[in-house]
Amino acid sequence: MKVVGLHIAILVIVASGLLCVGNTSAQEVKNLLVNPYFAEKLAGWTLEQQDPFVKGDMMPDSTTKVIGEYSLKMDIREIQAGAETWRAQPKQTGLTLMAGQKYTWSFWAKAEAERQLQCQVLVDVWDWRLLGLDEPVNIDTEWKEYYKTFTCTEDYGNARITWLCAQTIVDFWLDNVILYEGDYVEGLMANEIEMKPSPVDQQSVLTTTWGKTKSGQ
Ligand SMILES: [Ca+2]
Ligand SMILES: [Ca+2]
Image 1 (cartoon, rainbow, N blue to C red):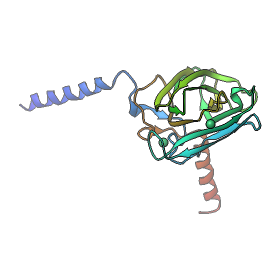
Image 2: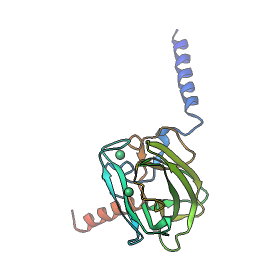
Image 3: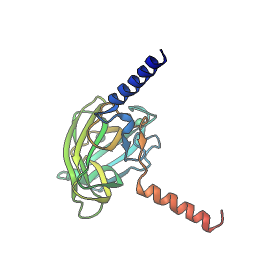
Image 4: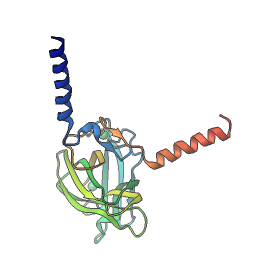
């Protein structure tokens, strides 16, 4: 009987091991973004916007969201005729991406009315060259998940993900934003997955430790 019990135990272990093989699971996904569901309001997110081409603001909004207390609301009040779509863009910068690596960028969005956003991944300084993604999404008045998978075209330590949004004054909301290595994984919630510390975070930890050592703390 003991031997039978052992065999069953081994079978269970092998079977559960087999179940884990194959698609990436939510537990394996590491989010490359900070403050991905706006728990800390707008920390880590900035609005690039050129006045007078566009007048608007981004703000945390507690009245509508997917997870946590807030979403990010982009309130666009005015767009000058002929303004390019890039004249307004909520973005996160300082991302380290690797050449040849496949990434998936997923997010939830809704808008006051149907509208388009242009998703881009690019370098955060002049000449703002693209790093493998420049595609539109059409969003509507219901919260829905959207995602883009792309392969990064070069090693770069200060990349930006951004939604170009000066197409129209229609306001929109974003939440649950996740950037991770590999193919799309269904049903990811940013509050349930691990965050990958960025090199910037590691650097600031080192600097802080060194500062404390130096001052004898
Ligand atoms: Ca949220
Ligand atoms: Ca508006």
